[in-house]
View (cartoon, helix red, strand yellow):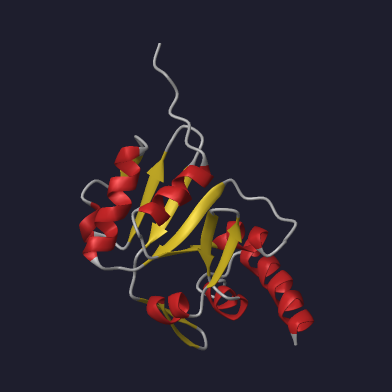
Length: 157
């Protein structure tokens, strides 16, 4: 009988930090860090698109025995890592077009918020940039998330 490959998302993020990966946790998991009462079972990361950074992600995936799709990820802008209990989507474009302009990884990374608990840390876009990421698609979940982000931003003003 084959043993399950269970990967704790916290361990995954700790390894990203240990390998000095330039990343941002985006999507609903990022909103959860801001206190959103939402559920999501996958993790979405926007990473620095440089090849060296991608190699670090691949190293983390190999260390955790995660599957990588597609094979040969150096040639694609999106890839997915799988364990038996965890799905991680990785986007590595330098920029994304949105209705009101463009999102650049470097700008978002410079403006990031770092959530810390003890020795654990996770890098997340600031609320304004996180809002922009929700404008890249037009899904029902994204529209719901935008309402929550707008509420948070209005509380901070």
